[in-house]
Image (cartoon, rainbow, N blue to C red):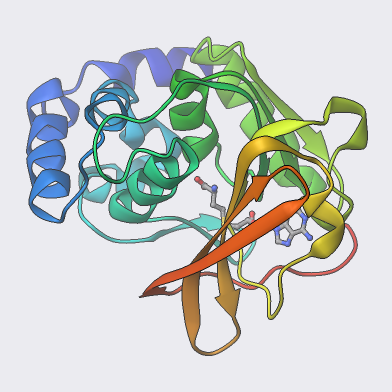
Length: 226
Ligand code: SAH
């Protein structure tokens, strides 16, 4: 796999120019945090999907990653990162430790890894954790820690987090996770089942403010591990 990723890294279709067009589109779609845009400009999204889908990697679409799961579309990855950074109006703040729930293929974790000192990412499907851990190692993404486990429990040993990003939809805010947010920290998640809304909860001391933003479409957060 190492060799194939290295070979694939240089292919024309997958060049920095293609990524540049994706960044322009994200800007038009309203992403304002330049640090997020720069991060997305450097992560090779095509190397996070199967080779057969590589030519579609920079389209504004979710793509299958196996196990019935999908890689989120570029807009939603950028949007969640910008919200995690308090960057929706302008340039946001640097992040220390971030918790991601739903590692999947590792793309969003790699983007968050450019914006944070460390990312802990939980995934309930063991086979996906193994595959993604190897991919991240080959791509030398060293500050993302993939962990097999049920994200609903969070990762107490690593708390507090500056941000928690949930990449799967759930009908209610998982209140247990809020205790793992540091002061000023934000939890960003898709809230709902059939109809989902992007939701941001921000901690100020022991108070939480909640904002509901645009409609989104995510795979569901499932209980337990597989
Ligand atoms: N951030 C990912 C998106 C993956 S899709 C990427 O960039 O590719 C959502 C992922 O959440 C799936 O891989 C799914 O298996 C995982 N998931 C669903 N419920 C979960 C849970 N309770 N704990 C941890 N991961 C979960």
